[in-house]
Length: 110
Image 1: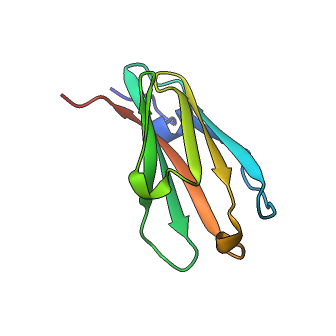
Image 2 (image 1 turned 180 degrees about the horizontal axis):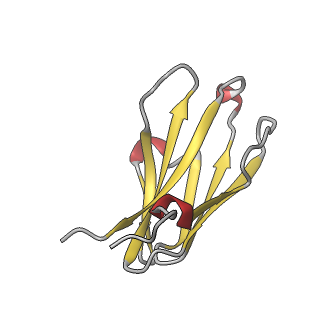
Image 3 (image 1 turned 45 degrees about the horizontal axis):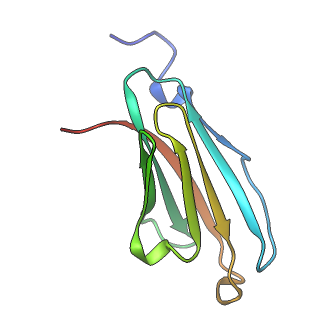
C-alpha cells in the first residue's frame, strides 16, 4: 500500500547535492532514509559518458563493505537502517575525472 503522491525515493536524501573538489582532498557525502524495514544503504558511481552504475559498496545494518577495486579511494560507514556516509579521496591519477554518486536504500535479502 503506497501513499498517494509520495514514492520511496522521496524518503531517501543525499547531501550535498553537488560539489567540486581538488586532488588529494577527501570529501564526504551523506545519505539518509526514513523507510521502515530498509536496512541497507548502497553507494554507486557513474562516470561521465558512461551509463553504467558501478557499485562502490554498501552498509548492511552496521557492517560496511567496500568493493575491492574501490578500497583505496572510498571509505563507507554508518547504519543502513538510518544513514550512511562515504568518504571519497580524489587521487592525483583521477584528476579530471567527473562522476555522479548515488545512494539507494534497500531491504535485506534472505
